[in-house]
Image (cartoon, rainbow, N blue to C red; front, side):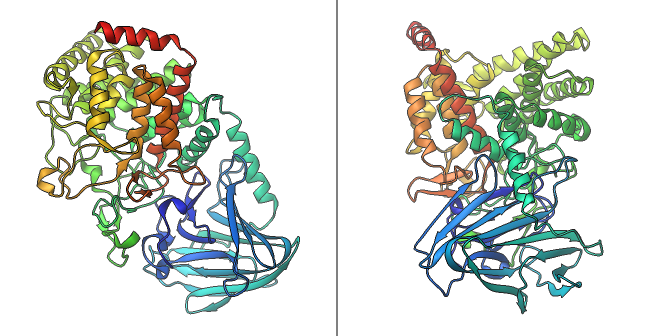
Length: 617
C-alpha cells in the first residue's frame, strides 16, 4: 500500500470522531469512539499492517478506467464512483449524524451501489486497534443474520453487511452486483462487555445524515465571493467540533511538516486559541449554537489561574507525549507521537484569544452570561499578572521562552476586551477596570517601543529582536493599531517580502538547519504555513491593497484538494500538502480572508481613504 498524498484523503465526521478515506476506497484512519480515541485503522502512519478497510471494485477484475468523487451536496458524506469495463460502481462513505437527542453513534457506514452494468464489489477489512499494535479476535456471532465481532481489550467492533471470510486477522468478501443493487456495510464500536448495538444498515440513515448537514449548511448567511469554498470550510470546521462543545485542531496525529522531519505532532485535542478563532469564523457566518456551546465548555472547564494551551475534549489533561515506535510514520517520518508536550507550556496569547471571542459574541448580541463575564475578568487579571514574563508563544516554541510581540498584543486584547464588555454590562469593580485599562496602555507602549524596528519600519518577533513572525499580521486584525498606520503597513510588507515561501505562501518565521539557530529549538525547516498566507490576504484587504488580496486569495484557493480541504502546511516545491489534515486553522484562515476581501470589495471608498492616509503618513 503506497503512501497516498495527504490531500488525496476525504474527511468524514459526525462531530464525535472522524475518518479519512483514499480515492481507491481505502479507509486509512479511524479513531473510535472519539477523535482522540485509539485508532483502529492507522495505515495512514505506517503500512497496511497498521489497519485499513477498503471497499471498492475487486482488484483482480476489470481495472477501473476512471474514478471521481465528491461530497454529496453540503454534507460530509463522500461518494466515490468508478467506471469499469463492465459497469459503474458508487460507494458512499459517511458517519451517521447526531440524532434529535444529540447522540452520534460511533459508526462508519459504507453503501455500495451498482449504477449500471455489472461489477464485482470487494471489501477487505483489516482492523488493528491500538494504532496498529493489536491483532484482534474476529468471529461471527448471533443467529439469523450473524455479525462479525472484533475484540481487542476494552474495545469491540461490530461489522454488519455481507458475510466476510476471516483469515489471520483479515476479513474479506467479493460480491457481484447488477445495476440497481446495493449493499450496506456498517462498523460500530462498543465497550467490550456492553450489549451488541443495533445494526445501522437502513438506507434512511444516509437520508437523515444528508438532512442534518443540509439543515446546518442552510444557516450560513455569507453570500459573497467564493461562497462554495467558504461553506465547505465552515462544514469542515463543524466536522472538527465535538458534541461536548470544544473542537479539535485536526483529526490526525503526526502527519509531518516537512516529510522526514521531526515536526510531527498530535493535534487531536482542543486548543483554546484555535477553537476560539474557529468559533469566531462560524459566528461571522451566522452560526451561534457552536460559539454558545463552546462558551459553556469554557466556563465549565477553564481555570484562568491554571490555563493550559490545550486540553482533552472532555476538559481533562492531555496525555503525556509518547512515541509509537511500532509505526514507521507517514513516508517514514518519525516519530509518531500520541499526546502533546505543549500542554505544559506557558502561552500568554491564549488569554487574549478567549477574551476576543467572548467580546465578539457580546457584540453579536448573544445573550450575556454571568459565568462568561467572570471568566472574562479572570482572563484579563491573569494576563495583567503575567504579561511581563517570557512565554513559549503561539507557535509553541520548544526553545528558550521569549517576550513574543504577538503574545503581548494578545495580552493587550485580553485587557481591552474585558474593559469594554464589562463596562457595557456595568459589571466589575471600576477600580479594577481602570487598572486593566492602565496596564493595557503600558503593554501598548512597550510593544511600540521595544517590539518595533524603526529602521525597517516593522514590528519584530520578540522584544528587542530583528526576526519577523507571521503572527504579527494580527496587529491589524485585533485593533492594536489601525490598518492605515504606517507601522502596520510596513509590517505587512516586510512579512510579505522576508517570509515569502513562493506562490504567495508564507513561512511562520525564519528557520535554519541547526536547532541551535532556530527560535523554536527544533532542527530543520518546515513547509509554508497555510493559515498565515490567508492571514496575509486578510491583512492586504485591511490595509487597502484589495486587488492584491483578491489575487492572493484566488491563488490560495487553488491549493485546496479536489474536495476543498486544506492541511496545516504546503510544500510549494513539490506541490503537496504537509502536516495534520484537515487543519482547522487553515480553514478558519480561508473564511477570514474571504470575509475581508468581500467586505473590502463592497466598500470601494475604503481604498481611497486608506491610500490617502498612507500618503499622508
